[in-house]
Amino acid sequence: MANIDPQAMVEAAREHATTLVARGATCAEVLTHLATTAEAISGPGTVVSILVLDEDGLLRNGASPNLPDDYLERIDRLRPDALVGTCASAAATGEAVFTPDFLQDEKWAELRHLPLALGFVGAWSHPIKQEGKVLGTFGTYYRDRREPTPREREAVSILAAVAAMAIRECR
Figure 1 (tube, helix red, strand yellow):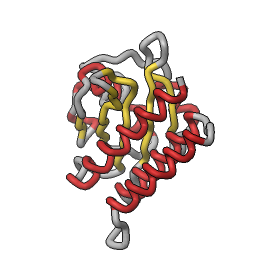
Figure 2 (cartoon, helix red, strand yellow; figure 1 turned 90 degrees about the horizontal axis):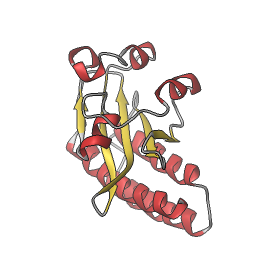
Figure 3 (cartoon, one colour; figure 1 turned 180 degrees about the horizontal axis):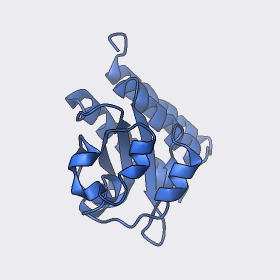
Protein backbone atom coordinates (compact mmCIF):
# COMPACT_ATOMS: atom_id res chain seq x y z
CA MET A 1 0.00 0.00 0.00
CA ALA A 2 3.03 2.27 0.27
CA ASN A 3 2.83 3.06 -3.48
CA ILE A 4 -0.77 4.25 -3.28
CA ASP A 5 -1.37 7.97 -3.03
CA PRO A 6 -4.94 8.04 -1.71
CA GLN A 7 -5.45 11.74 -2.40
CA ALA A 8 -4.43 11.32 -6.03
CA MET A 9 -6.65 8.24 -6.36
CA VAL A 10 -9.64 10.05 -4.89
CA GLU A 11 -9.13 13.07 -7.13
CA ALA A 12 -8.76 10.86 -10.22
CA ALA A 13 -11.89 8.92 -9.21
CA ARG A 14 -13.84 12.16 -8.74
CA GLU A 15 -12.79 13.45 -12.18
CA HIS A 16 -13.52 10.13 -13.88
CA ALA A 17 -16.93 9.79 -12.17
CA THR A 18 -17.86 13.32 -13.25
CA THR A 19 -16.86 12.47 -16.82
CA LEU A 20 -18.87 9.24 -16.71
CA VAL A 21 -21.98 11.10 -15.51
CA ALA A 22 -21.54 13.76 -18.21
CA ARG A 23 -21.30 11.02 -20.85
CA GLY A 24 -24.53 9.42 -19.64
CA ALA A 25 -23.03 6.35 -17.97
CA THR A 26 -25.34 4.29 -15.82
CA CYS A 27 -25.43 4.85 -12.11
CA ALA A 28 -24.04 1.33 -11.62
CA GLU A 29 -21.01 2.13 -13.78
CA VAL A 30 -20.21 5.28 -11.83
CA LEU A 31 -20.77 3.68 -8.43
CA THR A 32 -18.71 0.61 -9.40
CA HIS A 33 -15.81 2.89 -10.26
CA LEU A 34 -16.09 4.58 -6.85
CA ALA A 35 -16.37 1.23 -5.04
CA THR A 36 -13.27 -0.20 -6.70
CA THR A 37 -11.35 2.97 -5.91
CA ALA A 38 -12.27 2.67 -2.22
CA GLU A 39 -11.22 -0.99 -2.24
CA ALA A 40 -7.83 -0.05 -3.68
CA ILE A 41 -7.34 2.61 -1.01
CA SER A 42 -8.39 0.29 1.82
CA GLY A 43 -6.09 -2.45 0.61
CA PRO A 44 -6.19 -6.23 0.20
CA GLY A 45 -9.00 -8.10 1.90
CA THR A 46 -11.52 -5.26 1.74
CA VAL A 47 -14.72 -5.27 -0.27
CA VAL A 48 -16.94 -2.25 -0.82
CA SER A 49 -20.70 -2.24 -1.29
CA ILE A 50 -22.66 0.84 -2.24
CA LEU A 51 -26.34 0.61 -1.37
CA VAL A 52 -28.89 3.12 -2.64
CA LEU A 53 -32.27 3.98 -1.12
CA ASP A 54 -35.07 3.33 -3.60
CA GLU A 55 -38.35 5.24 -3.89
CA ASP A 56 -39.84 3.00 -1.18
CA GLY A 57 -37.03 3.85 1.24
CA LEU A 58 -35.38 0.41 1.01
CA LEU A 59 -31.66 -0.24 0.50
CA ARG A 60 -30.87 -1.71 -2.92
CA ASN A 61 -27.57 -2.68 -4.49
CA GLY A 62 -26.01 0.24 -6.31
CA ALA A 63 -22.59 -1.34 -6.85
CA SER A 64 -20.94 -4.25 -5.09
CA PRO A 65 -18.50 -5.55 -7.68
CA ASN A 66 -16.80 -8.07 -5.38
CA LEU A 67 -19.71 -9.51 -3.42
CA PRO A 68 -21.49 -12.64 -4.66
CA ASP A 69 -25.00 -12.34 -6.06
CA ASP A 70 -26.50 -14.65 -3.44
CA TYR A 71 -25.20 -12.38 -0.66
CA LEU A 72 -26.61 -9.32 -2.40
CA GLU A 73 -29.99 -11.03 -2.78
CA ARG A 74 -30.06 -11.77 0.96
CA ILE A 75 -29.45 -8.13 1.93
CA ASP A 76 -31.61 -6.63 -0.81
CA ARG A 77 -34.42 -4.38 0.40
CA LEU A 78 -33.10 -3.82 3.91
CA ARG A 79 -35.05 -1.11 5.67
CA PRO A 80 -32.95 1.60 7.34
CA ASP A 81 -32.80 0.73 11.02
CA ALA A 82 -30.38 2.09 13.63
CA LEU A 83 -30.31 -1.34 15.29
CA VAL A 84 -29.46 -3.45 12.21
CA GLY A 85 -26.00 -3.96 10.70
CA THR A 86 -23.83 -1.09 9.58
CA CYS A 87 -25.42 0.03 6.31
CA ALA A 88 -29.02 -0.07 7.56
CA SER A 89 -27.87 1.75 10.69
CA ALA A 90 -25.91 4.39 8.75
CA ALA A 91 -28.91 4.94 6.46
CA ALA A 92 -31.20 5.39 9.48
CA THR A 93 -28.92 7.66 11.51
CA GLY A 94 -27.10 9.57 8.79
CA GLU A 95 -23.85 8.89 10.66
CA ALA A 96 -20.89 6.57 10.06
CA VAL A 97 -21.27 3.22 11.83
CA PHE A 98 -18.35 0.98 12.82
CA THR A 99 -18.40 -2.75 13.56
CA PRO A 100 -14.84 -4.05 14.02
CA ASP A 101 -16.15 -7.51 14.93
CA PHE A 102 -19.52 -8.92 13.84
CA LEU A 103 -19.52 -11.37 16.75
CA GLN A 104 -19.34 -8.53 19.28
CA ASP A 105 -22.03 -6.26 17.81
CA GLU A 106 -25.70 -6.96 18.54
CA LYS A 107 -26.73 -4.93 15.48
CA TRP A 108 -25.47 -7.93 13.49
CA ALA A 109 -27.26 -10.62 15.53
CA GLU A 110 -29.66 -11.62 12.73
CA LEU A 111 -27.33 -11.01 9.79
CA ARG A 112 -23.79 -11.83 10.98
CA HIS A 113 -23.88 -15.33 9.48
CA LEU A 114 -23.98 -13.79 5.99
CA PRO A 115 -20.66 -11.89 5.99
CA LEU A 116 -18.98 -14.44 8.25
CA ALA A 117 -19.72 -17.13 5.63
CA LEU A 118 -17.72 -15.04 3.15
CA GLY A 119 -14.76 -14.66 5.51
CA PHE A 120 -15.50 -11.12 6.65
CA VAL A 121 -14.95 -10.21 10.28
CA GLY A 122 -16.14 -6.61 10.46
CA ALA A 123 -17.37 -3.63 8.50
CA TRP A 124 -18.12 0.05 8.57
CA SER A 125 -20.55 2.20 6.66
CA HIS A 126 -20.61 5.87 5.71
CA PRO A 127 -23.89 7.49 4.67
CA ILE A 128 -24.18 8.97 1.20
CA LYS A 129 -25.94 12.28 1.74
CA GLN A 130 -26.84 15.37 -0.19
CA GLU A 131 -28.30 18.45 1.46
CA GLY A 132 -28.76 16.45 4.65
CA LYS A 133 -30.83 13.72 2.98
CA VAL A 134 -29.51 10.16 3.04
CA LEU A 135 -29.42 8.67 -0.47
CA GLY A 136 -27.58 5.46 0.38
CA THR A 137 -24.53 4.00 2.09
CA PHE A 138 -20.91 3.30 1.31
CA GLY A 139 -20.02 0.09 3.18
CA THR A 140 -16.62 -1.56 3.56
CA TYR A 141 -16.16 -5.16 4.72
CA TYR A 142 -12.90 -6.34 6.32
CA ARG A 143 -11.36 -9.79 6.62
CA ASP A 144 -9.65 -8.80 9.85
CA ARG A 145 -10.80 -7.12 13.05
CA ARG A 146 -10.26 -3.40 12.60
CA GLU A 147 -11.74 0.00 12.02
CA PRO A 148 -10.99 2.23 9.05
CA THR A 149 -7.89 4.38 9.16
CA PRO A 150 -8.28 8.17 9.10
CA ARG A 151 -7.06 8.04 5.47
CA GLU A 152 -9.82 5.55 4.57
CA ARG A 153 -12.47 7.60 6.34
CA GLU A 154 -11.43 10.78 4.55
CA ALA A 155 -11.31 9.06 1.16
CA VAL A 156 -14.74 7.45 1.60
CA SER A 157 -16.21 10.75 2.77
CA ILE A 158 -15.10 12.38 -0.49
CA LEU A 159 -16.13 9.40 -2.63
CA ALA A 160 -19.54 9.36 -0.91
CA ALA A 161 -20.08 12.98 -1.94
CA VAL A 162 -19.27 12.02 -5.53
CA ALA A 163 -21.64 9.05 -5.22
CA ALA A 164 -24.39 11.43 -4.04
CA MET A 165 -23.91 13.53 -7.17
CA ALA A 166 -24.06 10.43 -9.36
CA ILE A 167 -27.19 9.10 -7.63
CA ARG A 168 -28.96 12.44 -8.01
CA GLU A 169 -28.01 12.61 -11.70
CA CYS A 170 -29.27 9.06 -12.32
CA ARG A 171 -32.73 9.71 -10.87
